[in-house]
Image (cartoon, chains in turn green, blue):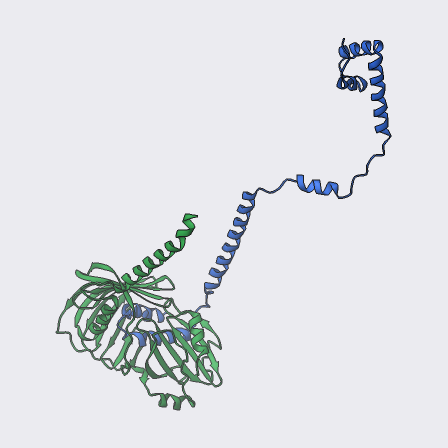
Length: 306
Length: 146
């Protein structure tokens, strides 16, 4: 009888303790910064802190080593060699992102007209990575989760572990980092430009009808850029809308006349562990949604297009 | 021997006494008029009772008795059975919910779907939390696809 009388009180105490614990993880500070403030610093450092670094990655079970020259203004050049000796170069010269592999070389405009969202994260601890003192952060959005280590003095990401639907997708870690000002200027090679920034009027013109925008998006998702994409195979232009919440990403490809020939209407595919694809037809328009989101969320977004 | 009491006479009359006692009572009755009269009255009463009609049993008598004497389930055992049943139901419910939560496996990727993902990944490469090294590995792997 006495236990029954105390049960509601015990439940209230347990709820208060749980809420307090959750609040503590959200507002835990290292060097006076909360998890969210560290992530804001990461965003700022990616644009302002130059460095040269070497590191390694295991992605989809494949190992590779890389070097990276990071300049200011988002400029960088990364060279990566996998276990079979195959190379890939990836970079950004402030206006275009490009990549070159053995048989492919493409570039696309970087559209920074719209501000990026800063994701929410919580501090999980501190560690030494690449000889640097780092704060450890856990960031998640939908099925995507990242565990990152951030240099406590500069805000540069020193390591990153990515999980999608609780399954490890990739691990990246810098083995050596050298902060220096004399990073050579990065210039994009002259390659085929596959994506060009475009206004919604320009996109409506190529589609022959207004662009479809999602009426419903996951929380904190914002429009990051609008592009036109020319398919090298079918030569059909697509309208491209890019959304992000600072961690998860969503890209909508819209095109006329149902040209998603190989995929078909309502087709849903899992090209890798890092994103899902789903397509749907709206009258004369076919839309492919690609995102680091759950299939149900992609479905809901497509349902809300108008 | 003194005169036997009524209980001893009834025992003699119904043959419910041992042989020695029966012999002593029989010898006494043979010599005692009062006891002979008493025994005769007793036999007459027994005869009168045997002539009475046998009362009929009511139809609902036995079911009522049977219900009262039937073995009843132990209250604690019943409680455990109810709890076990609730446990099984809860397990089924939670299992069903988990089964519905799990997303079904998706079909394998086509080259076209992979191309969309490559575009999507490249667009995301400028994000502060983008895994560019992972993207580069995937770009190399994409070249292996037909």
